[in-house]
Length: 206
Image 1 (spheres, one colour):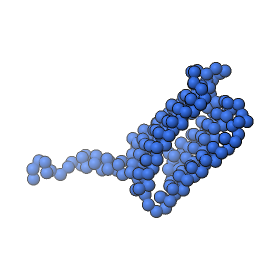
Image 2: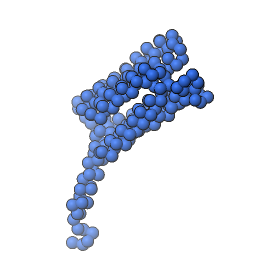
Image 3: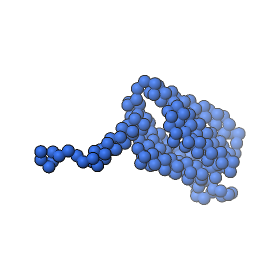
Image 4: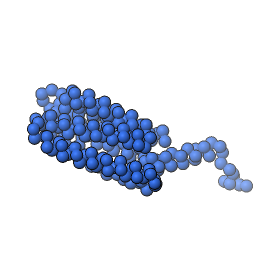
């Protein structure tokens, strides 16, 4: 047997096993970097723009209108949503049976929830001042995200997803109590940054 044909050492075999295990985990449960980090970046950008518009006092911190700030948030979320959809599509190809059905129903729940949110907020927004209407949209959307994350964690037995949903709910509640400017700031830092941190941490733990 030549030197090139020698059996791999135990260390090399362990490294290969770990690499294959991580790759399999990403394939079956989704790549956390693809599922979490784009949303984190989107929320950092979008809610920072809203924070610069609202400020923490009577004046904004940058010459940016509410519609411009919302435009930044929506554009960044569209990109994040496309990347996440790609990640979930890859995930569904690898999963069959009851798990696939649960994932499909869970996806419809997101669609139904946000469709109803748009209907309710569109109806109520004209009755509120600009800052309060913005807080209504942001607060209800984060409430849905928190509840659906916790429900998804329960359905798929994913504890990180469940606990992060609870974290979203807590930050959202505090922000709504403090007002639009604080809500935007806390969401950008604690939730946008939180999404990025969770994605990186889960990827390293795979």
